[in-house]
Length: 469
Image (cartoon, rainbow, N blue to C red; front, top):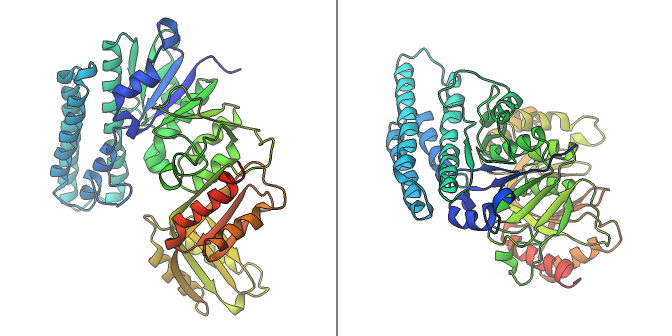
């Protein structure tokens, strides 16, 4: 049986505007007991994790990236992190942050990290220590610092504003034990009465398998899910800086898109595959299995109920719920007459993708051609292509940039959606390179030239969402 409380996650961009988040989300019009029965999982302030690790979009190295490359400028990079963290502290003084306490917290953590990295540098100089034995732990140590700061600050600010907030530090700072994930969460919450205090919890959790090793940059949503499941929350809420809409309001126009009021976990998986980050696919699984719905809300539009993601929702009327896509895609095309009617031909091809840890979004196949469409971000595609050519010496192996535009909905199993989509793209003079739809008919994917990515979304949204309304 589920409890009364909610578990709520606040992303990094929203955390950077914590004054507004406090007014809109955490306190708002609540008083007394209404402030409680909520648990907040917080991300690092916007840009801090990029500085600690590497830039998520460009790949530019931060402290970890430079340290891993044996680049001595990691010390300068760490000082830049300190400067930015203290600047965030300064920006929150007006809403109640004790800057002296906040700065001391930052300096203690970063000085400890600097000492640790100096010690590892000394060890490395002896030449007997393989970097594989300490770099994963180094990445874990660095990632934890951002969430530790934001959670510590948030608890201080809320206390100053009359809320009985508690800083829940799951980062394992200078703690020798390595519990399991479940043990770390259970131990932290064993003495917390959520009806009387408001836990502000770090998005990073230190545990035996390493949260970064398993989930990399999506770890805060994994923490959100695990806390919701282990505490048996009635609902999980993700506060973002935008609503989950029928399309990208910046691209299509805020006056043309509509908020998606209700959808299901199946659609959330499709959005995750499109890199939409509505909810990390691995985070949603346990909540789905436990029957805990997820609500996606705009942190700066608190009166709107947002989008509820539940287990069994299906739209009562056939409709397209979202037009989305991703342009960071490369097509890996293998053409080989030898594959015709040959059982298991694609085994060697997939073996190369697996060996280089390359996942694919979708694929197309015919008698002599198999094409996998893979995200290009941080993937060793050129090395993978060489490996495919080695395994399949008679095949023609090529790659080229493309984009995927996806039409998603819980109820699209009627004639017409496909033909309307194809006509909309044709009328916009967009050439469809490939089209993929499974028999379940919840997701139609059109492969187009990257130059047509934005134009395709606008055309499809008009034909399938705006004109239908």
